Length: 383
Ligand SMILES: CC(C)=CCC[C@@H](C)[C@H]1CC[C@H]2C3=C(CC[C@]12C)[C@@]1(C)CC[C@H](O)C[C@@H]1CC3
Ligand SMILES: C[S@@+](CC[C@H](N)C(=O)[O-])C[C@H]1O[C@@H](n2cnc3c(N)ncnc32)[C@H](O)[C@@H]1O
Image 1 (cartoon, rainbow, N blue to C red):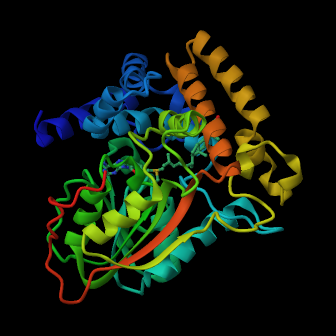
Image 2 (cartoon, helix red, strand yellow):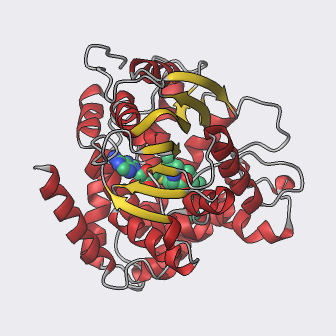
């Protein structure tokens, strides 16, 4: 299928799934107004790719169909993410006494600072979700942001929130696959990506597109999801954790940190920073909201968030969604989505505790001043 046909089909499917009120409802209320038949199809499309098979053929299929697979994943999880986590779909470090929202915003400010974003810069947010980080970074720096996303539902939501918070003049959101960007070469002053490029079937694919659209001398900053140096692909226990993360988070293949490092270099980037922000002695670990350990709760205002993200809260949500589905209040397949998200939580905590996985591998990379627009990455295989 051509890319134009795929786009048309995805846009039409999104309208069928979410109806005309798309974007305006959030969380469980959005879930309840979904079209039943379309939701069933979306869940099937997502789970057909993550059916428990971890052999090379199954992996190949996931990598080949990355666009549709990820599109389906976010069609079914976005409402749960917003209900449980908010409108920034990423992790962060936590300091003593700091609220959940402050910690999430600080993580975004830090990336903006490391990318060197200035007032009036034109910035690209690769895989922008529903625009939580874009709104925060635009307010924090005074820059202009274009959010790129292949998920029509999230784009509609991002546009709705930008208008609601009077930020439409500073930002726009466009549909597109980050493996094939439509922007002119040398367009953006800075590019950032937060926990999104891990959905790529090949990191050189997305990094070379970023290199192409970045102005010479511009920087790219990313929080990458990778398996760390401790990870051994041939260790069954390790592979099980990586697969749980792939399944529950809609990722075709979790790559080793070296793959990401090499991919940046192969794309002709000059790597300025390469640091795992999760590899530290923080008293409160980044994955704490998913553990259900009450000792870590920093702020009474976080009780509702912490309950929803904790093991107990997740069991409660699953039970509630099961009843809602039986009564016809939630569309069919919603229960299966909560089960997949449970896998995500278990895999992420296991990956975090063992330090086999990090969601915050920070890379800051520069496109040299005298750069060609598109590096030739074809001869340099890294995967
Ligand atoms: C998928 C990628 C690359 C990044 C997303 C990171 C996180 C924002 C999500 C990873 C697992 C998600 C879960 C939830 C919210 C968003 C995540 C933390 C829930 C807490 C949402 C409410 C459900 O009932 C349980 C979910 C568990 C997993
Ligand atoms: C975990 S979310 C992170 C969203 C956002 N960066 C944030 O922190 O809130 C990953 C995002 O990447 C987007 N994405 C995944 N694959 C993509 C692709 N091939 N092209 C464009 N966007 C993609 C998803 O639709 C989703 O918005």
